[in-house]
Length: 462
Image (cartoon, rainbow, N blue to C red; front, side):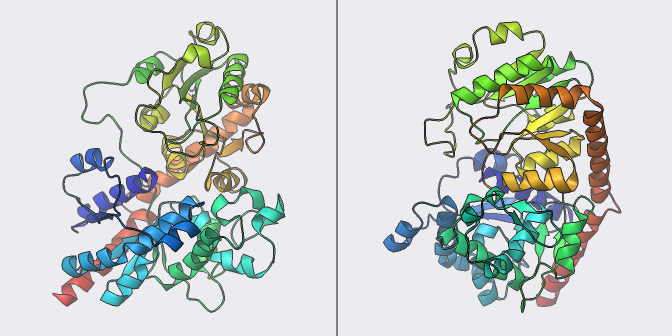
C-alpha cells in the first residue's frame, strides 16, 4: 500500500542519515509499484518475501474484509520473515500495524521490535483504548449510529465515523484491531508520523498511560514526523502543465481538489461538484478520475483506468467552456505537494488521508474535509474539532454532497474572514511542523534518541 510505503521510505532516508543500514521488507504479491521507489532510493535495500497462502478456512473467514485478509497474510508470512531475520540479524525491526503478528518472530529471535504507524497520534490513542471501549458496552459501533465514542485526549467521535473494519463487534477484522492494542503495548515502542506539537492532548494522554488498557504497560511513543515525500518532479526536466497554469493565477486564489489514489465519485456526484465549482465563482484546480462501476468504489483503480476519459460527457453540458478562464481539470494525477506549496493555492478539498493532511500542513494550505473511506472520517473529526485546521464539506456522510454546499464552502474558504482565520491557523501549524523537524526540534530529537539506542545495542553485540 503506497500510503504506508511512502512515509516508510522517508523514515528510511532519515535512518540512513544517522549512519544506519536500512532494508524495507515487503510481503509477496504485486510489487511493480516498487520499481520507481527503488530506483530513486538506491541506498535503501528492498526485499520482498515470497507470496503467502492462507488456509481455506482462514481465507473464507476474511473473504469479506480487506483488513482482516491483510492481517492474516502478514501472519502467514512469519516463517519467511523468521528466515530473513535470522540471516540479516538487524539491530531493530519496525513493523506496520498490519504486521502485528511479526512481534512474535521478533521476540523469538531477540530482535527489538517497534511499530511504525503511518497515521496521526490521535488514531494511536484510540487504537490503544479500543479494548476499554469494547468492555464498556455490548453494542457494536454500527449499532451506536452517531452516538459519541470517548477516549482520553480525543474529542468525541461519532461511532459511525470509525473505520468500517471495527464497526461489527464480532468480526474478524475488529478482533484483529482489539488484539493490536495489546501488541502495541508489548512492543519496544511506537514511532508515529506526526509531531507532538500538532497533537499535544493525544500525545500526552498516551504518555500518561490514560489510553492503555488496565494491566498492560504503556509503550514509549516517538513522534518523528511529519514525514512526507519529496517533490514528485525533482530531477526531471518536464514540469506538469498544472503548475504552469497556477503561475498565472493570483496569490491564494485557487482551490485544489484532489482525493488520493482511490478517491473516485459517482457520475452524479461529479456533476454536483462541477455545478458547485461553477456557481462559486472561484478559481479551481481539480483532479478528476473515472467514476467506478457500481459496488467497486473501494477497488483500487488500475493503471490506465482514466485513459480516454471523456470530460465533456462527464460534466454538465458546457461546463469546461464556461469555466475555462478560471478553472483547470486534470485527469488521474497531479504533483500534489508542489501544487499545495504553490503561492496561488488558497485551499485544499481533501479526503483526509493522513499523508495528504501532512502535505497540506507542510504547505500551510487550509482544508475543506471530504472524507471517503477507512480512517478518513475519524481524521475529519480530529482535523475539525481538535486541530482546527479544516472545516467539513457537509453531506459527505450522506448520499450526496450538493452543489450548493460545494459553492458555499469554496466561496467561504477563499473570500471570508473565517477562511482567512483558518489559513492563519494552518500557517501556524506549518511553523510548528517545521520546528519539530529542525536541528533542535522534538521530532528530530526523538529519532536521534532511538537511533542512539540501536547503535549501542548493535555495538554491544558485536
